[in-house]
Amino acid sequence: LVRTTVFVAPATALIPPNNKYNVANINVPRDDTSAGGLLAQATQAMRAIDWLVPPPEPVDPARMPRRTQVRYFNQGDLPRAQACVQALAQAGITATAVRVPLAAPEGQLELWLVPTAGG
Image (cartoon, rainbow, N blue to C red):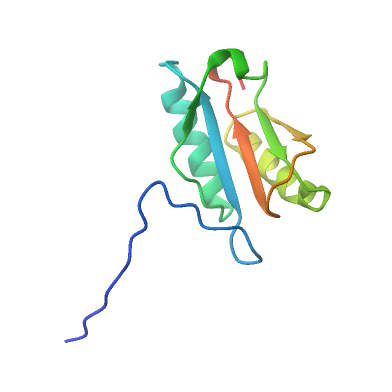
């Protein structure tokens, strides 16, 4: 008999990006009931390319872009953002990589998922 202890982080924990982990935070419009299926597709697409995807963050719809965006913060993350755009495209979600000049850890992206705009 072998006993293994497994620590499961709470949903609010964010594993910092490094050379082993990439983190994609997903933002969805608050109270948008059409987001469910698309959110599941997006999460599955991101996890399929080994991204950690914390639970989505509901955002005020007035703050949402008009189209789905993969936002990256460091110029070195452009290839990661483009890989995410491609993975989302394979899942039927149209997205654009957009650089946002704010400080963020390397390897951290945000997916701003706009269900009502068709992706």
